[in-house]
Image: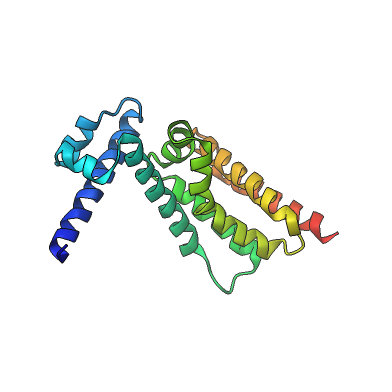
Length: 192
């Protein structure tokens, strides 16, 4: 395939993902029809099915892109010279910033588990934001040992619930303080 064909192929794929994202945010997955997606993307129905098996596969591509964007935001907040606690607090702020992108909380935390299932959603998260969380926790809690996996999973769930609460109008500063308290409590407990 020539470079221009590859570029056109990728442009079509990205147009489908962007149009689908916009419609999934506006209407929800269930109320978004594939003819609406192809019309919004300015492509044919054949192009949709050339790139994606079905609407669910397209939705998964949207979710994977959103999760990667969250991970990238967290990684960009990293300062190599920061102490583990400060790095974790900066990562938490970056996560909340990333989740403030319109529609992202709905897509990642509400729609994805319902549409592609919890195991698939957990796998995508584990490869993205949760992976950065685990790395931060390993630096902060070097004595956690085998508990690092369960602690990562539980704290990831706390971050997700906080993002949902913030989107619903909760005070972000309160949730950031809550996350800091959880981290400090874990660190204190594991130092004993």
